Length: 545
Image (tube, rainbow, N blue to C red):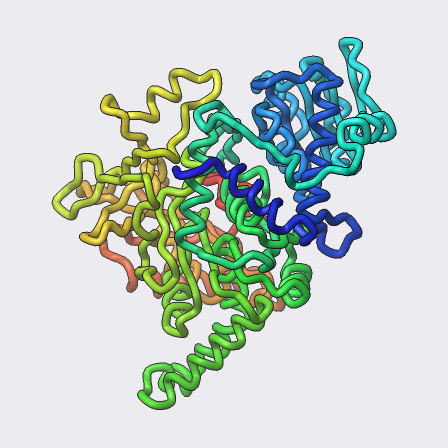
């Protein structure tokens, strides 16, 4: 780490004081970098008046919005600890996390507050509205100053108005900066403790991998309370002087594509599910035609066709996208190959909340198919007890790695080896150029009858490419592999249940021709509802047996 990420933010404020920094897409709320600095200062005054001290925990539970970013930066620059909680958690679970984190204060959005206000929340001294930072509840005799009182103090402190010369953010990078509760695809959430060094090294790694000029634009669609969204859609963009547009509504295809067309972002950070849906609905019907299949590899014609496909994809994401980042789950090999064939600026990284989140990633021009890139600066990776194929659990070490799990020493000890390497829980291998390849999760790996390692994710990749399959999970029952399938609603909407069952039987036969004999699937079971997912759209595998 060269500098704390707040050093980069301060520098940007000095040079881009009047440039736009944060906006709620389609709404009036917006901040220039100067207005962001002023609003941070107002919140600092409120914190002081309410007796908040350095190291106190302050939670955020809200939808994505500009004020989420303002609250986060105000907490960080005050040297308090951000507790980021996904708004998708149930109110009762949010209440338990607030108590577990020892949060003294909460910024809460209206959607969360509707249900959360029914909980006792006795551990919180102050609750502020994310809409306008007004008080919703306070106790312990704490009086929350109103806007007029705060503005009066601001006027006294800065009689000629605040300028970039007044911005001073001095923070110890080794102090605890963030408690991020994991979304829990394999079980209950844990409070990951990250210091400023981890967050700053993540930001600097992104700057190296994805260089950009100030003044560019980003559409923020990933949950900000999740580490991937927090880095890619907020901290990194704001530290390089971009204008971040927050989607305050659920990113449905129509909402997302309109925002892309309006904002014209230089970068898109998302989960594979988004691009896979676009490929399945827009490109797959076209590319599956025999003529195009033939022409896809025909010299002379090939480049022309692929160029048209790339142009259409770039246009769909606003026309100016230079980086298309995917993480959080494995991408379909078919979709990945198509994107790489047309030279789409794709990069798939490997990350986890415990690393804030970056472990590995490459610029698009160096990205290698099916990999997750090489370790980012100041991070190392190795394979623990590799087998004869070089596969084993991926271990990591470096500046991005967490301090541990908050108030959970047992889980923290279990997460590290005796010599200080962190266990990722992912199985894979590393090539000669240090690119990491992930085969699957240790917890989801199935041991075959003859001792072979079966990775359900690899079978699911092939099953998901079959006609009429929306999403799938492969499980083991009584020594047999069963494919649980939620049908693709669009392609099967005119089919009866019997017709869908017949199609799945045909899919089963096709699937088993594509996979080794030791990992043959015995049956396909149709699910009536989509699989329950985490906010980053990973299926909660532990719920399905």
